[in-house]
Length: 113
Length: 109
Image 1 (cartoon, rainbow over the protein chains, first blue to last red):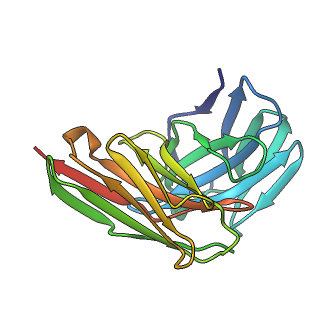
Image 2 (image 1 turned 30 degrees about the horizontal axis):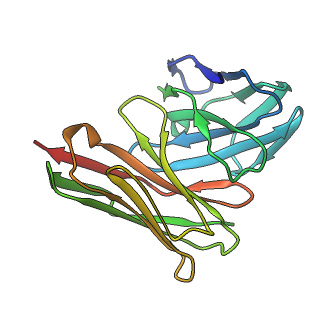
């Protein structure tokens, strides 16, 4: 069966520090991968999606970046965190066309202080 | 791009009553409409979905209706139970998946 792992579960980082969140998917090949951010009391904002290794589409201009070094690995990064980067970050995957069921990880609660 | 509006943002019902959450979308090319349930501190999980060639779909106490002409779709939960309390998200998808802002449903025992 397929599983998605996302870590860390919680993270407290100072302003200006770098960020690296990792997401891996097991049990499937060539998934579409997504990073979403959920601000407190708000919906899911699509940040990045990837349909293959090295292919990244960015939805929102910001100080975050994403990379897909392997088929089932998706990394969210920042060189210098801002207070406004605080939120709940979710990785997700699906197969084939993007209009199919997406499976989410457990999320990372990031607090920038 | 797609824009999904979801209402209400919060909803409180008595156990046993029905709950209805409504969403509208803007992109007529969207053809897949899932609903996700998110419990506290967890990632969202799919509870039901519908495609544009279907007007209504039901799974036990949960049903979803879709009006493609009006570009709106709704989630109906009947005989609500306290464990239905969660945040519910609608989404619309064609080339990517866009989510509504979420509805916090509270079912009072």
